Image (tube, rainbow, N blue to C red; front, side, top):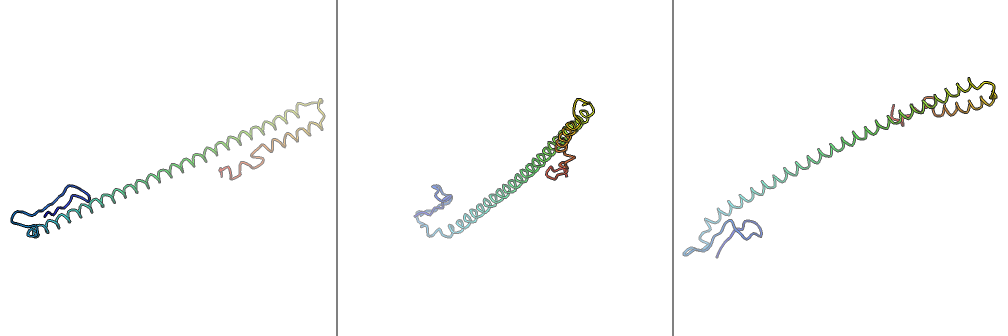
Amino acid sequence: MQLVVLESWGSRSWSLSWADRKGARLESLLTEIVPELFVEAEARYRSSCEAEHRWRVQAREQRIEAIREERERLVRAEQERLEQIRLARIARLLSEADAFRKAQSIRDYVADAAKNAGEAVAREDLERWARCALEIADSLDPVQSGAFLQPNGGML
């Protein structure tokens, strides 16, 4: 008869083995076998505990790294969002400045036209044209309309 302790489940190699000997049966070796089995069991248990501990430490480190990466991603996303807001504010400000200049240009044009029209144009027609042109200038002017103070521009 033979008693074999395999290296691992399903293994074909063994770490310990005992067999009947000439003049000594396996049963007579129990006082030698049992302590060795306990030592082997304890060693495997400790090895298993160490492996599990290493796995837990590695899993924890992976979770910490994933959290760090997610935080970095969120910070980058927030920075990008703030940059987009900043760029939108700049674009709106430039657009409003352009509209303001256009409104001023129309007003200057109306003033020059009124001053230089002379007698060739009927006063009534000039006034009607000037009113219409100034209404358009006022509608374009972000200061006149108060559009530059609207919160949707994000400037306030």
